[in-house]
Length: 190
Image (cartoon, rainbow, N blue to C red; front, side):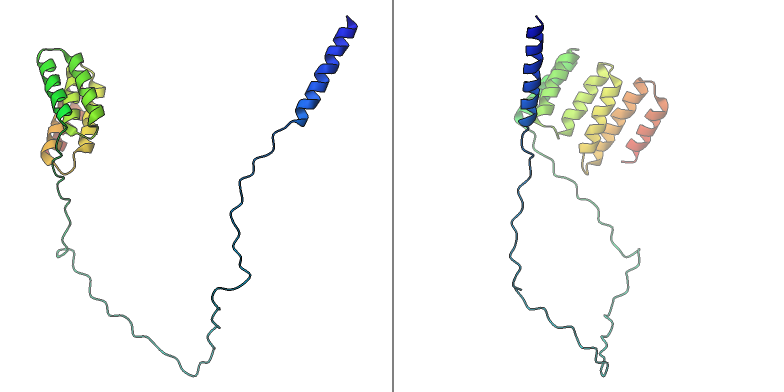
């Protein structure tokens, strides 16, 4: 019995010793190629002499006076062209409207989430999805979706106003009267 135990310890020690010797080599990234810089491609020009017998002066460049702030035109961003909606997105929006009218808000939500996967930058999808979350009384998600829609509306103040009015409605239904007033003020600024 003791012979088996000592044989076990000897084999274990040998295996540990052997495994320590089989360490993987350290990975070293390949070195970048070295340029041959033994010869100069261009001769280096000699430093200019320090002869002060003549000095040349350049005339200062003529600058025009800065126009006054009243005469500067402030560039306004051009409104983004209306993007043509995908026919599948239009069908899903119609399906969601029909489901919402029938009171089946979960079905409307599913249709709108599919439309969102197809057209992730379409603000109309976000507006309709936000309305659906409002009807499902999921106010936090409704506001998040509406704010995402606001971020997607570029240069279209009518849509921005529409989103901010929806956010005011969401906040009011959630019991945040102060937040609703802030959203209404933001909507009226457009």
